[in-house]
Image (cartoon, rainbow over all chains, first blue to last red; front, side):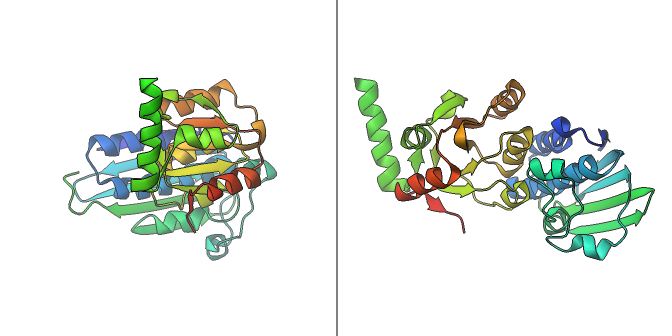
Length: 141
Length: 134
């Protein structure tokens, strides 16, 4: 199954709508509760990142029997130093983002913790692509 | 009268056998007002976590957790939805707009407004036996 969602940068009132929709899909597919929680938390952090930092983004979800792949592609400032961005506590978030309860520099590490593999590629001035894969072992998908 | 007795009995069983507290009792200890999902206020909580940092809330793995926060925005509700938190206490009577209440209602999350500060709410509930997470 494949789904595609579009996200607008700065649209804080809708941040989380994609994760919410995917959560419902995973429930319908009878994916283990704990596993589903990890997946939607990683996705939600990624979604907030796009809203917080980029101009626009696309989220592609691909689910089969074995795994769920989430690809978040955004047009935005990109990440100059990915290793630095992965460090807990490092953030370039605006005051507005911090007022929403994010921007403490925990997003990327939370995403990594809640997925089986995470890959980030970024081109400063163009945008960022984050790919998350989580295996659904033991589930019928 | 019968209903009232039942309520007290449930409260007693929660305390003795599950070490949990009814959401209605939580509200009464902090001068709280249940804003939505009153029908779910008969649920129980065992742990509480106070935070204004949503990424920290997303690290919560336990169930039956109550969130105490000074933030009143949509992200508090979305974060709770993702973390399976079914009750949120909003400190210092922050204004909850209709969008926030609607999203909480859709997700079956009980919202409680309290005039107390995050510190006082945490203190009262800790004293009453609600457990910390960390």
